[in-house]
Length: 180
Figure 1 (cartoon, rainbow, N blue to C red):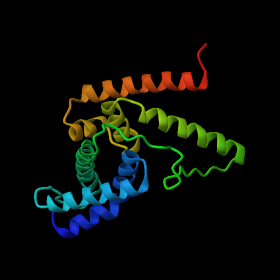
Figure 2: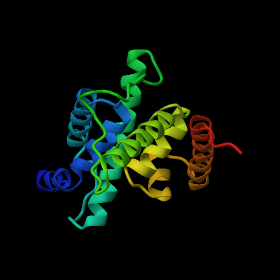
Figure 3: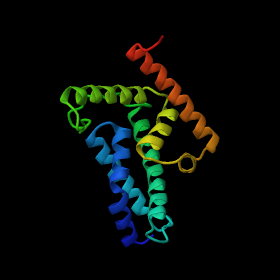
């Protein structure tokens, strides 16, 4: 991939990659650092990364590969810190959940609180499930793409998604006291 294609990739998929880094890290400063490290590593590997044309599907495929780089860098970052998972406050002032609805403010507040509960539940999933959920819902990857990024079979991706949904459902039922 040449420099021009690399710039097109960042222009078209940079926000998506950054948003994924933000969901991984939980706060803006760490997300910016992870994003910069990811893009630096991708630039170092640009000669090895195949990007033959600027079609949307080809750019997205390459961005998915770069998201895989961010996962590896994040894992190394966490290992370096001596923890497997960051304890992140979802009330972080630097990384608020921005929600805009055309409804009344009370409904907006309730929806915002529901989103915070779901994000908190996702962060409490086992690491493997959490990564799969992030890739599927936040990075908007399909099962096959996740399979390639994580180097696992498609069946394992589907299994992790199913188990993660079940765990989330149970956690949220408990939180909302929805059991019959």
